Amino acid sequence: MIVLSFIFIIACSKTQKSNNIFISEPETVRLGTIPPEAEIVYHENGFIYVMDRAGRNIIQLTFENPRLWEHVAVSPDRQYIVANEQSPNSTAAGGSSKIWLFDLKTGTEAQLLPYFLTAGNGGIDWDKEGYIYFGAKEKNPVADPATPDDFRTNAGANDIYRIKYNATGLQRLLNTPHSGEADISVAEDGSMVSFVLQPVNTQTDHTEIWMMNSNGTNPRMIYKAGEVKLASAHDPEFSPDNTKVIFSIVNSTVLPNFPHNPLANTAHDIWSVNINGTELKRLSKSGPISIAPDWKGELILYLDISEADRYAGISIINPNNVDQLPNRIKSGGNIAKWIP
Image 1 (cartoon, helix red, strand yellow):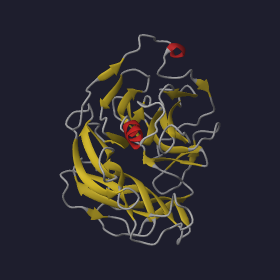
Image 2 (tube, rainbow, N blue to C red; image 1 turned 120 degrees about the vertical axis):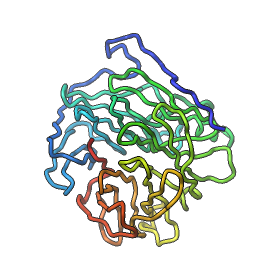
Image 3 (tube, one colour; image 1 turned 90 degrees about the vertical axis):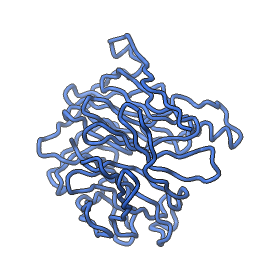
Image 4 (tube, rainbow, N blue to C red; image 1 turned 180 degrees about the horizontal axis):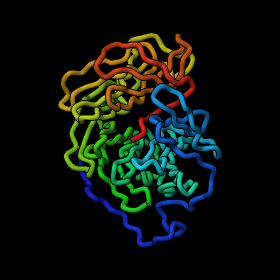
């Protein structure tokens, strides 16, 4: 049973950032600016960049404190960048994640929700009102997990939150003690949120693609995927008209891309499906690791890794074709997202 916690607001009466527990003291750093022609944001070797849709006119935005970034996203007004940093953590399955906010106008960086155990893992996104959406866990319900039930309880503590860029209006949109959520994304018009839900109290270790209204109401499942690492689904994104979602599905039926690396030895394919669960179709040709898609207009960005082709970078496919070869636009670029 999904237990909703609508508008779980944690208010902060302090106005000075140094006294706001929801954001660290901003630090001055060297930052670039986003030119009008930039359409894609991505990261590479610990730094954040933007470029056009052809993979040209590359501009570096961050220059200091290289980090192990996962996802980056630009605010609709192009003043802010939010990114999640991954790091190992024995108390959080799969490691932990920190959310960093860059203000390109003031030239500062700050950490959002520094007291959370983990925040942002798997996906992070904006709406037009300046809210940042992400999966997060404030703390583990079981401080020293020892049994399978303890670990399942802690996994279920990862819920969906949002907070404004100025560190106000923190809300827990979905409170699900029997499942963990990740891979959060917001529809282009800001009306809906898509995410991956993984039940933690069932015998089958699988994932599901879900959606809900951006205020946390009306959550519903779109697609039930298979077993994790065999046929699980990840990183859903809405189509521009909100009628479909795209995501990757693990494809364990093809030869491993990296046989000697257990963390990257299975292919993923990009799929689309109507939000009512009909017309499931595979968009990318099987074989490579095709993950983290993002849809704008008639183009889908995604991370494309193929040992056979000796390519690891950003690629583009068309949402209307099936089993297609990609247009590879940026070798070396990591998970990319369209700039609003």
